[in-house]
Amino acid sequence: NAGVTQTPKFQVLKTGQSMTLQCAQDMNHNSMYWYRQDPGMGLRLIYYSASEGTTDKGEVPNGYNVSRLNKREFSLRLESAAPSQTSVYFCASRLRGASTGSPLHFGNGTRLTVT
Amino acid sequence: KNQVEQSPQSLIILEGKNCTLQCNYTVSPFSNLRWYKQDTGRGPVSLTIMTFSENTKSNGRYTATLDADTKQSSLHITASQLSDSASYICVVSSSYSTLTFGKGTMLLVSP
Image (tube, rainbow over all chains, first blue to last red; front, side):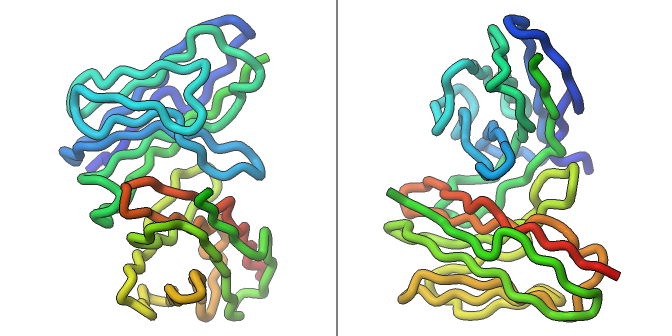
């Protein structure tokens, strides 16, 4: 049972390069999320998809785009990477919305460095 | 503005000792509070959820409490083990399905 799988695990980019972070879940969850985690900041929501076919901005969406490819897959794209985007990125999924009490299931993160 | 404050920021305890982590929140309207454990280099994993009507809930050596009147929660770890070394994150859900994350408490259990 893989849960939430993120690729790649590590990535180094130069300023201005683009890349896509991939995320897939095999739990038939409806909602998927992208977070970034920085030292002293905690987890911050970038984008989320409440259900297949919908995406919405979170707290820190600038510089990112997302695609909910199907129910399983939710990708995060950096069009022109900046050093401020150096972070650890986590994808998460949950069966239903937050108020229902469903837990978030996280992947193990992508560690991105932008030089 | 919804906020979650955790204390202490970091903690070092000897193996076998107990410890208590604190979470204070100002999230309205409150729906539930969940504690996550995040091992180094891994994603967070849910430990337990507390709803409005629950005061105490145990999960093995972990016991969570909730005081909805004072908007405080605690996570008590009994007879700590080296594997308890991790960051513990408090996350509060509102009835509008928004999540507010605390910054976490970093626990180090020393042999």
